[in-house]
Length: 263
Image (cartoon, rainbow, N blue to C red; front, top):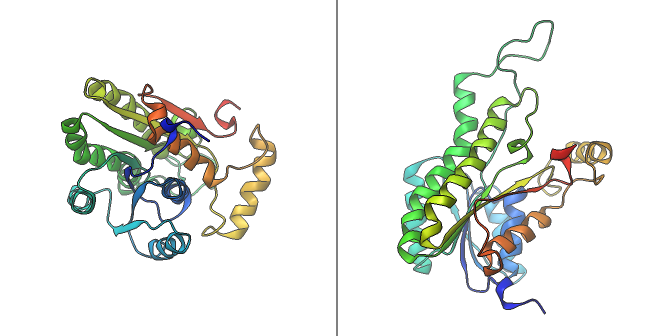
């Protein structure tokens, strides 16, 4: 039996961009562990199936369609959570996406068109601005209560850049610094801010089967541990950060990538 400090029973949690992929893995583990979880996504395409699955398993979750890159939808998300629960204990800023393009045309290369202004802004908004907005919206509530936990989901790109992934790498590195800086600002008020930086975690339930298989093949040689990650593994680390067991940890970016960022 685990020590009581690892329990999240009854804790209220918002997880953004969590209808599939890493966010889904986090939501599943937290709900199975007794937390009250609200999952948001831009559309209901995967929210509905996830909600039905969790209800059938005896771990119901709340769902809400919302755009986490806009202040208006963040306020609506906060208002709905407060109406249903009365308080929020944990905020998981999970939204993310990438566009693989060079900054400028590369001589002698057929790599395609360079990154546009709109694409740069999109990648920054969906990876970095969304966390800024989430923390700005929920933060005053945490500070007033003098308790709360923020878990930002970055990526191994926060430590190691990749060619033609400029915007994504810059955004994920920025998220790590946002985490560190906000942790220092909020530490005197009992609020912790930490970051998980996952490596390769394909979603076998909603991803393209050929791409998932290709990711697994590449991981055998590219990842020191020789495999891709399982979505549940990110959820288990999030469970630790959401629990009282991690109450003395703040400002950290924890790399969960099978050693990929060190390779």
